[in-house]
Each structure stands twice: as C-alpha cells, then as structure tokens.
Length: 198
Image (cartoon, rainbow, N blue to C red; front, side, top):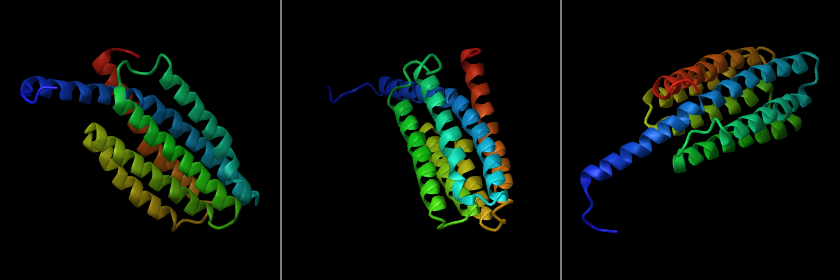
C-alpha cells in the first residue's frame, strides 16, 4: 500500500463506509420496532405473573417471546432485509445488540429466579443495557439523536427503582414505546426516503 494516498479518495472511501453503515442501522429500524413491541408484550406478562404472585417466573416470557423475536429479527437481517454491503459496521451493530440481548435475558433470568432483585431492578438492568446499545450505535454511525437517547434510557431506568414492582412494567413499556419503537419507525422512514420503499 502506498504511503502517498489520495486524500480526496480516502475521504470518499470513508464517506462510503459511513453511508453504508447508516443504511445498515436504518434497516435495523425494523429490529428496533419488533424488539420494542415484543418488550411491551413481555412486560405485560411480567406484570401478570407478578400480580399472580409468580414473580420467580417473570423471566419466562423474556426467554420465549423476546428470544423468539431475536431469532426472527436476526433471520430477517441475514435474509432479504439485510442492506447490501453493510460491511464490518453492520456486523458490529449486530454483535452489539446481540450481546445486549443475551446479557439482559441472562442477568434478569438468573437474578430474578434466585430472588435476588425485584422486578423494577430487573427492568432497570434491561433499560441500562438498552441505553448502552443506543450510545454505542449512535456513536458508531454518527447519528447524534440516536446516541442522545441513551441519556433518556439512563434517567428512565434509574427511575424504575422508585416504582413498586407491579407498576414498573407499565412504566418500562411506556419507555420502550417512546424510546425504541418510535426511533425504529424514524429509522425505517429515513431508510425508505433515501433508498425507496423496503
């Protein structure tokens, strides 16, 4: 490789990487939507199980519903919905969100089943993990508003600790709708505007 590279060509190359990466994230808006809606379903089941006094089993809808959604989303992203040439950044985004999903489910399942923490604290862990995902994704792609959502997740997740365990799922569901489903639709709209209907 020559030490005297063309700065204009280098800039164009970097810009191309960023555009492909933003397309990957925008296409992943579908994942945000599906994950968000499944989270609302899971929090509803969590509330029901807590109300019935079966708090030790609150992790079960997260494993089956959220875990099943994860498989569907990863399958879609690997298939025809995956943007062309998303490259290394696309794989990095998939690794970030895959790791966050596995960590959240495993931590909440283990701690909840052992009775170490309450439901509000479990959802706080999930919210903090989501905030980390938004911070990393927004920083990686260079979308400031997406990165800034991490601050709202941080504040909201801390607030969950002050709600009774039976009220925490409703608060978390509202957070998911506002901070995950809505951004997912915004990312999808952005992708469609730039690349036509998908």
